[in-house]
Image 1: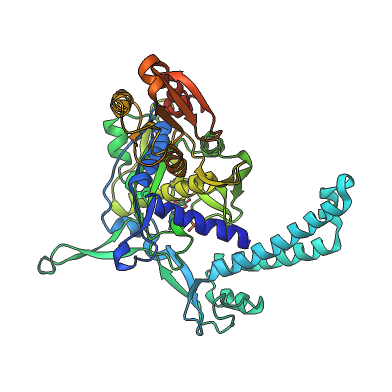
Image 2 (image 1 turned 45 degrees about the vertical axis):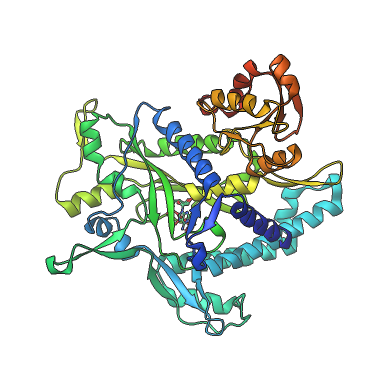
Amino acid sequence: MAQQEDQFKKIVSHAKEYGFVFPSSDIYDGLSAVYDYGQNGVELKNNIKRYWWESMTLMHDNIVGIDSAIFMHPTIWKASGHVDAFNDPLIDNRDSKKRYRADVLIEDELAKIEDKIEKEVTKAAKRFGDSFNETLYRETNPRVLEYKSKYNALHERFAQAMSDNNLEELRQIIIDCEIVCPISGTRNWTEVRQFNLMFKTEMGSTADGAMSVYLRPETAQGIFVNFLNVQKTGRMRIPFGIAQIGKAFRNEIVARQFIFRMREFEQMEMQFFVRPGEELEWFKKWKETRMKWHKALGMGDQKYRYHDHEKLAHYANAATDIEFEMPFGFKEVEGIHSRTNFDLSQHEKFCGKKIQYFDPELGESYTPYVIETSIGVDRMFLTVLASSYEEQKLENGEVRTVLHLPAQLAPVKVAVMPLVKKDGLPEKAQEIVNTLKFNFATQYDEKDSIGKRYRRQDAIGTPFCITVDHQTLDDNTVTLRHRDSMQQERVNISDIESIIDKEVSLSKLLKTLV
Ligand code: ATP
């Protein structure tokens, strides 16, 4: 665990050192849980967004995009349930004065019990070797069974308290489990209170009668309230989807883990409108489609898992998370939810206008059902960064820090370097840059030794480096270096473009999704 924390700290400082992610307002010592993306970060982020956007809008002729405003009519958040129920239960420790989410403290406790079970199983697997029957062991070992029943009892009590919105019971669970504050080590807890996560502000001058508005906590509502606009103007026929990428804001109680939980973040959401009764079929389809999208990046299939929700929100009839193995454990990156016709019906009720679809095949009108896929750009960014970072020990004893980014997402695709800064090599290198730059993000670098320049590109995840030397002037060949293998090959300048394109092309990646 300590090793993983250490690794995570290194990733955070690497992200800053190499222009990926800076703390917001850095020269003023930062603003909690708000971050800025630097010169390399913005490119990586844009590439992630492009991959998502094109996988939705280019690959599906029945999915279109929109870009709705961050400010929306405040009644929207009444209708969606956010004003009344977008709350987290919070609790303070009186000694450390630190604030926690009561549900997260209990979830951590549950995870600890799970860890104990896994430890028992790993220990036994080692002890029994090849003859180990894991299923049997899990079903019969008394210690494992004891942990399991403890887990189940706690889980049930917790789920009940959450669904009853019973704040006293949540506190009692924390007391009964003897959960201590990680800072003070004490159990001196306050009451549990509900805390609404929406940021509120005023719109218009007070003289005109200002109106309280919210910074949207999700992009989805912008899609729901535009359902009729898009359906009618785009002559969309069900089933169809509307995709959107945009900022969302949540006043998170415990903002930690870098860009995993931010107060200002970006979401990529798609609402897919279907016939009532067909939603579970579509839910299954989108669950698979989205997992395929993640895995196509080649960051390791074993790093993903589904987490199906047992306890569903009152409006949902199925929900799952796609979790990714972060340096701090498996965590949600994306949610896929079957939201029934809840949102459209609520808006219909609150705005007083009919929000229905006339299905020409069925010859009837209905309120469409919705499958939503919702992924955080920043969390996705973190999965890419965390799984790419490596401090690689080389044969000569040196260590190189390399980002094995999926080549299609890398901020810089190719760096072109003259071996020395004279003899016409810089000019030749510039010539190559001037042909490549129209297709690929290309960087020219002539400063420092070639070894140092390679390291700099490794650190930002550039898949290819091209070195121009004296031989280039004679025969138009260059050295092409591959980031992951560090292998170098001599290639003709005229072949460079196709070699690079094969690896970095987004359209080739999209074709693997079909
Ligand atoms: P969590 O349980 O981690 O708070 P959530 O279930 O509330 O997340 P959703 O409301 O389903 O999240 O939002 C969809 C996606 O938006 C999440 O899967 C995540 O990738 C992203 N997201 C949500 N909250 C944040 C945040 N505070 N910072 C960064 N990304 C976020």
